[in-house]
Amino acid sequence: MRLNSSTYFILLLAVCCASIAGGDVVVKTDATWKATSPAPPAGWNTSVSFDDSAWQNAFKSPTGDHIWLTSNQSGQAPNQVWFRHVFVLDQTVASAVGDFYFDDNGENYLNGHLIINDPGGGATNFPNTTIDPTFFTLGENLFAIHGIDTIAPFNNVSANIRITYVPEPGTIALLLFGAIVLCRRSFHTE
Image 1 (cartoon, rainbow, N blue to C red):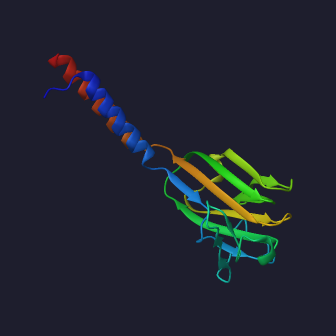
Image 2 (tube, rainbow, N blue to C red):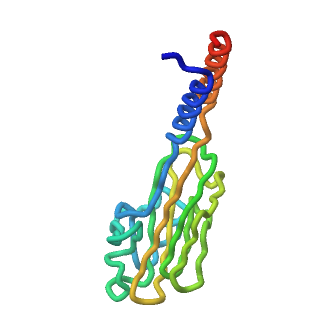
Image 3 (cartoon, rainbow, N blue to C red):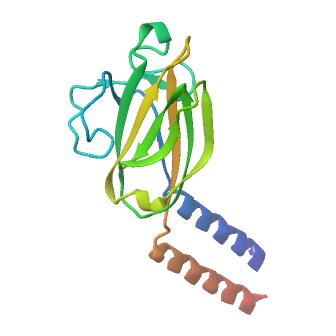
């Protein structure tokens, strides 16, 4: 079977999209996050090396990516909780977008940078929040949340961050070279 130049181009585009999308990272709230109450000392939201070894794993709500400490029922858990999650990035970040949720108030931090401040009371969604790529570092990064429950019956926070890496120059060069070869080949054979 012989492929024409349009088919080659579509295959190349699919490979390109798979190569670029394959390096993305998702960070979201789950039971692996560390949680504590009462308030921790300074550095909990700024220092990757802050000692959270005495903290508990977060309570994961049965639905969604919502977390809290010990329970998501207001009467069974503290009204303020502090969360930490360290994650590793091995490439430069091109862009990042997050979906955040507070029931009821709180703050989100990335490496000490305040991303969301929600003092409004009541459950609030912050969908498609753009995060400055310069807030990320190569290696270990810290995402921290302070959640405040003000209205019963539930208490929850959640975060879902989609991080897109800068495509590696070698990948782009290889794809361009492949496109040139395929175009030249199909030009000479048609």
